[in-house]
Length: 98
Image: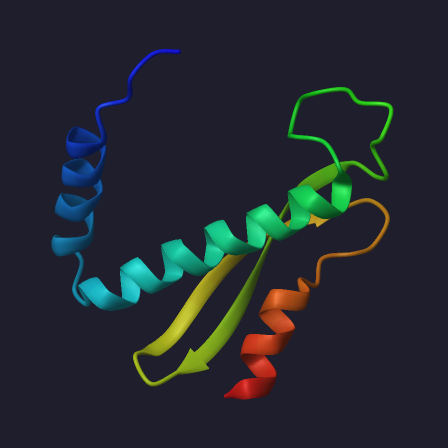
């Protein structure tokens, strides 16, 4: 297995975040979007672009949802699936808890 250079990876992302108007907001958007991607991939039971006998549905693009919070309005990209719609349980929990 190839060793990944995490310092370079983190340095690149931190630089991107620090160039934003509100760095913490950009970091939070990215983190929440990635967590919802993980949830959707688990729901589908197969990674994007890979075939699997266990697959339950298929990816069908992205949808954007707004989440209003203390750092402002976050725009989250949520993976859509053919069967099951666009709503992420994780997103719904965030929206309800606010």
